[in-house]
Length: 265
Image (tube, rainbow, N blue to C red; front, side):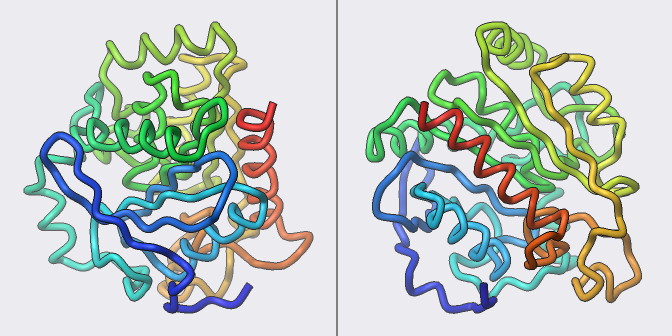
């Protein structure tokens, strides 16, 4: 699928929950809802491509814009201005372990609205990088039936820590005893999403958590990170190789299968 900054096939909606209004890009005419939460870069051409793959598989996508501009012109790089904004923001829990980010309280009603509009048994959620753990915190809500953590990176100061409060963690664990399943993806050796986080997730959730760790050799050699001499990080966006038989492209099909099993029983 060709990468482009043209997202004329998406519709922008400004939605308000808890007194806060944020843009949400939607695409797809029918099917169960998937909440796709962008990386620290914001909404990018590679994220738009991932959203379109979900639509092609029969889902309707809701992509909230938490950082950057509500279009696909955001570059896949971290600027000093973006880092400063994150550090002073009260919506993201960057450093403390055992604490859910406040922005999750805005995302949960978004999931409820998406479910009301799309129907079906519930919604799927995938968070990436900065937002990787958000899908876990959102899974306290029974409307979330398929949480996916892609290269979760927060809290950044704790390799094994999770950005979820003990109370929320207990609620999600109770849901796994009733059949909730959780999937996670990361590149092996990724210094931004360390393997210790998956160790913690396996310890907390047992067989309910499936963690897929992709060899770094499967990363896109032409990605912005690769060109900067850094190991691959973005499983479903910048470091994905869009070709049949590639491990990262197969991961997309795995995620689609996970969503389908949970949302199309």
